[in-house]
Image (tube, rainbow, N blue to C red; front, side, top):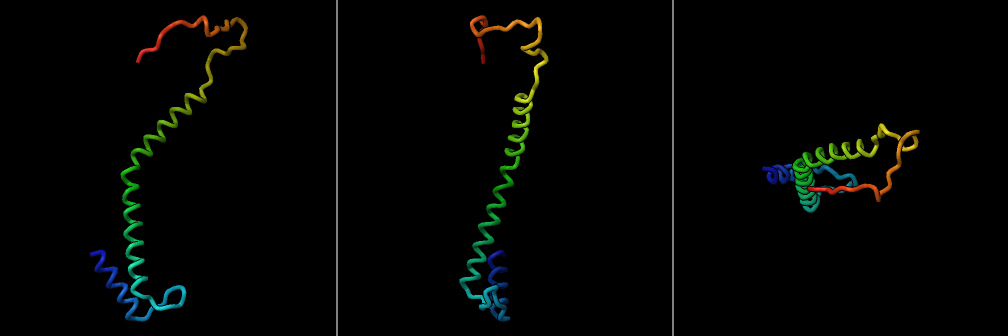
Length: 96
């Protein structure tokens, strides 16, 4: 249906002698160019829709990461009475 409509409309433009922006009559190569332009652009727009959930998830994850980065700890290292711990005093292990 899409191709039929494009060829119909292209024939309509040609039959009624409509002119393009450059002032020339529409030719068959202009019509084919328009058809492929419309097909490629609609396919690109359609493919964006399948990636929107991933973009939303990435935005949420980014917000969580910036919340952690911007977090101000309750204990300040320069307050009186706080003990500074060196990395040699820290013992433990990390498990995944």
